[in-house]
Length: 417
Ligand code: IMP
Image (cartoon, rainbow, N blue to C red; front, side):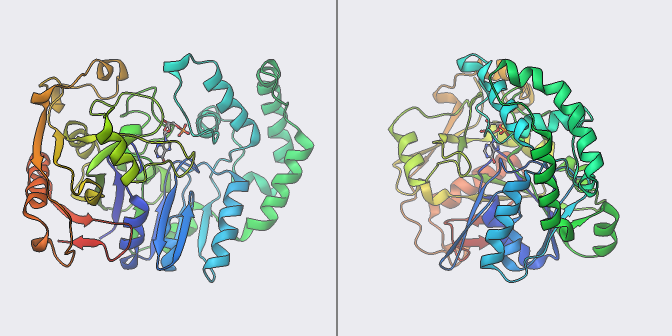
């Protein structure tokens, strides 16, 4: 059965490791949304791989595909691909010809968008030009990979784009769009990657009846429509976007992935956020620093209210929990089970203003005693009793089984049930 690995929180759940782990059983690994705002660090033996666009399945020699729902920064992609070719023989990566490109002016506009917002209203984007690139896609201005075949088409499109955006760029003292330079850069890029570009029908035909693993980027609570708007990313991160973003119409099982606590980078509501020493301890022990922007991630207790919502909007079949080892030895572990005693059915998650009003008190938390150190990772039964209790509480709350438990960055620190 095909599978989709979807982040259920605000991203950074550890999808990279799990996709790498699972990809052994699949023929093709597919990204269907987002861009190089995502970031994975995968450690295999002594080698550390840092990936933003290419699915981590590439490390296992799997064929990887970036679908039309992705936005692609040509320079970033080329550098990442080049890095991979130095570590892996013949990496197999295909790009949908229907992918819109992120150009320099998108990054400038991303900066301007943030600049004009007041402090607490700033989104805190990754500054990679993601939002403006999707804006151009919806606004029917994008330069897509298939356009790169023709110098004339690139030039023509850039002229329209320039007319539209130069006045804005100029008024914020940003450099104007340089058509000649951009055309040349795009033609050079095309020369380097044209062998990787395929149309949507190629991938469908090649992988008919093969096993596919879909890799979500970011997390469900950052979804453009389901997340706490406007503090979201600019794509649909939920599993229902898979068919549109990949153009591959197949059935799949959804594996929802979450950390045993919660983190968020950038602004926006975070009801179970910790502002004390415990939050700092988790951040330090969990190395909660953004892979893309190197910003310190905000940390908090696991929030089951939002997790239940994420499971529902993604139709999650099974769960994977990561990083419970970060909570080892804490004298007390908390889990948020209600928002001001409200259940998830009564919360509007896509309205950040209503989430801002949530301020949790003791009754909104379930408490768990320390489970000490996790020493034996050989099988589930050997985990500490208190950790098993923590796991069954989550399973019962969500009515979904936790089938994968990851207790460290290495492949062998994974328990499958
Ligand atoms: P953008 O996707 O760069 O437009 O950023 C929008 C929001 O999503 C910001 O709060 C970012 O910090 C957040 N974000 C985007 N990508 C990721 C990710 O991969 N992990 C965690 N947060 C992300």
